[in-house]
Length: 268
Image (cartoon, rainbow, N blue to C red):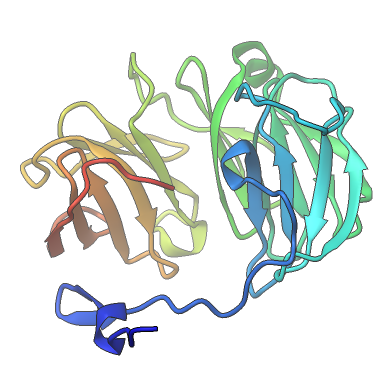
């Protein structure tokens, strides 16, 4: 077998080289991540997997009953449970800092599981207005979440230890945002969560409980496909419509890195 150059494993990003070595193969069998919703707990915690009911998939020998399965970080099945919840489609799920699995369904009901797939009571509702409008998407952070409804209204639970849903200011947009991200409360001036919405041709809206602010005016050169805020709330990484990786300050006043990528579509 021909020797593979070690240098070929490294990729230049801005002025640094990075590589992604395979540490170990996953032990699970017949898990197609493209057909499932997946939530990975931080620090090599468990991985939650459930069939994505928003996609039409061929079941093969699988049961029609959907199962929520929890795996170890190496792909060993830990436990599973049949998903029987009402409330419509499962929109999103994520692990909190204390390794509680949070699952949000279409009518705004939040179901929670521990690491043994035991349902944690009581369930949480995001409120009547959210129920009437249907949840379209969610963004999570440590112990909180923000959801956007099909009518482009934003609702927030800032801490699941005290799960009181709050409606944020109306962003006054007619179309769903291209992308959404959050700056956690401990990193904002107000002490409340700040939601970033990529909207229009070249604009980001910063939405809080008390108001909406326009960011990125004159800085962006087109719509953003994806945004991610750094752990300390200082930086915003964005993937643009024309295939550029853009790193800015989180208030979108300065560009730190701008890198042309060789792909025009962002793959999650």
